[in-house]
Length: 487
Ligand code: ZN
Ligand code: MN
Image 1 (spheres, rainbow, N blue to C red):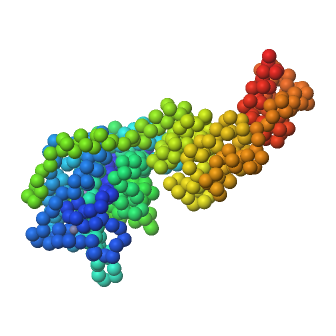
Image 2: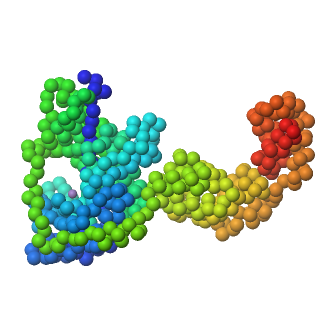
Image 3: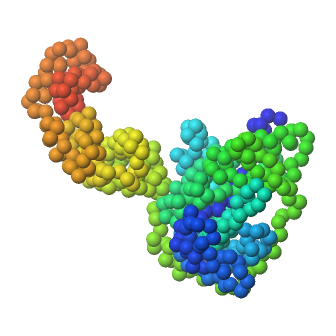
């Protein structure tokens, strides 16, 4: 059967490390890159008799994310022991949440710009939101590193607060999975709870995938895919696994429920272990930790709920009259959005400021290998630079020169630089003379303008700009030409 006759169903489980100073159940510091096994205590080493203490900040941050994603928080939540045996977890259970997690339901809106570039032009389900099952809070395990014939374990990571976000089987394609991770990351960065960088292991993702023939309702047998540590490997792993499963079914075989591993070097999935039954983790309420009433925490978090990226996009479109695309680019990064907003506030043309930030500023920063947060030019100065253009004091090309100069001396004012460069507004009677000159020299186009041809007006404006050596304000010139020829 052709591939189009199959439907893929995908669900994700995403683990996100929270930015907290201390661990989930003890006071040890959370720090990346410290000397191995220096950030430990009896609790996070899992020594017998050591007692856990809840990290209130981690609980609040998780509820905050839940509120941003429209989840509900049960009135009472609790922690449970998830039993399993592995060297990275010496107490033989992980403290996690079973039936009363911090957040239930909710969804993640998929942002257009979070789709892979080539998929953005043809989005299958525009405006889709991926439904969430739950978000719970647990502890990370230690990090084991496998050497040639031995394994080392670093307990610095053990006990780091870990938020687990579980989706419904609501994702249809590899592109949607990528959009989910990108959108979720944007929201997490906006919330300030995590940098959610997959390459740094701050966000880790497992994927459940099944395929079924079109026209059937029952979901196919699912395969769990592990070892995906970048958005691109999530995409490639899903594409590869969908193809493999269709091949198995087409050849008349059955999919066996199992965990597979993505091999990024070879670009294939390989069998890790089969699962005859669902894992039995023997969950039981952790007797060392009291359940928590959440009402006060939810109220506290609601008072500090940040604006979401799509809410910012809508506000930018409305307040600054810029396009949805420009607003989306600007809002895709919190620091960039703040920069733009400061620059555009009070500017004569917020639209011009948006164009300048997206086309000129981002390009220049990229060339200098700078992040927007390191931009030497204050946002307000970009606003006043473009006010000079909008007000007709300098031309767009002159603004580019002032802009480059601003990078070198960011303490100067754009108007000072323009003046020092001799960029004075063209004398209006002089420009008037140029207009008459251009009309006289181009009777053909002038006649067309009189008959209503706007392109011909642009041509004449271009001639006047040349005569004035770029000093005239093109908008005003066009208006003057139309006034003269269509009076
Ligand atoms: Zn500790
Ligand atoms: Mn987990």
